[in-house]
Length: 476
Image (cartoon, rainbow, N blue to C red; front, side, top):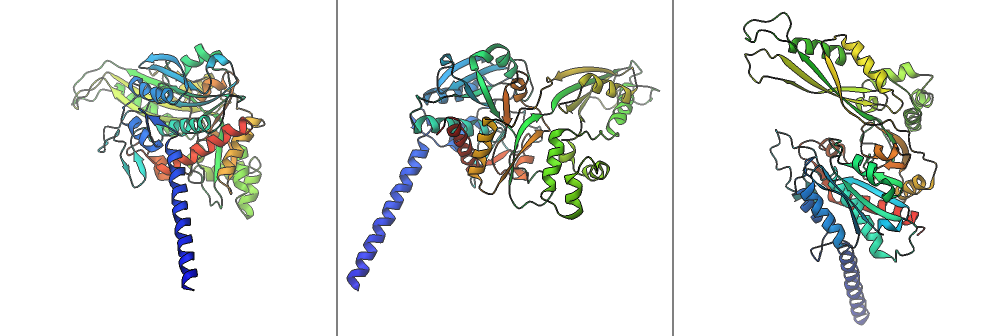
């Protein structure tokens, strides 16, 4: 018995050592997918370096040079589409673009939003703590970019890619956050034929049950096939009047602007149905019981009842309305005791795909009903048609998500915000937006806000889905 016990103990020790060696080998291979300056580096530590290079919109060059050099070092073919701040864009591809292979494009942006004045933490720290990475761009969009890059490099280094049907392209662009002309617009206007895209995958929604009301047994991953359009307006009122604050003029710019804005903001936006948001209501109905299930399964019949409930849920309302949000008010004076002569306000309007912007603008003018208020369009993204979800690209993306998350569901949806995919949709190119990770509501609320952060395991989860999509498209 003693001999048998010793033999069994030795056998178990060998098995344990073998298991440890296999684990270490697997980890080493995973670590070696990306190299930086000749050394293997994990996604999170590469992201840490990327975050630490500030790249507010219009100042992307340094960060762009960094991530471009990583792509080049790891064997991707580089094509530059602008090399200056505000116009720094490049493609890093599996094959040279000159090969003219049809391209699967993973679209991301180098720029981040300006840090807030009230931020007390360091917005570009890249600090890693408790398996979470912090800093501007941790999620939007540097983290997502590295999820994409990791999947492309894992594919390129794991198999012989010479027979691949598609080129796979990492496309990094400038000023997505501000929509300047030197970013995606410049690339699509001047280099679309070079890129030869058949499908574009960009930033979009994470898992949805943290964002929409209700109780759900299984996770739901949205794949955006359409998006609302940005329609930004500047309102100006200028009235010459006495300047001393001790005597209140009968009319002055601040007073007139406030009256005009009150007329805009107090009125509820009209609930508008389209195929995508009606489909969302029907989908939500499958997760309900009784009368609530009946109502949601027939949204047009019960629209008045649904609207009254929906008004209490702003995240849902945004998918059914043309929103008007007052984002800033400025005057030509910073003093407390001087009556300004000019007041300026900015409205961030987001339009549903079917909305005519001329009719919408006319509605704004009628609601204000004041010719003294000058209205200027500062940005208007083009009208686009939703991308079809009856094709191999959507099906393979859906399949890759469901392969990773076994009990999940997917849903084609409309995004309440706009992003760079619109530039491709205007050209009729299939474009899908999804970041298939289970992001907490708290983490999502920190995007474009204080303390942006991302759980490190999510970097690998998303990369795994994107890799699966690439393999399915290549017939692997």
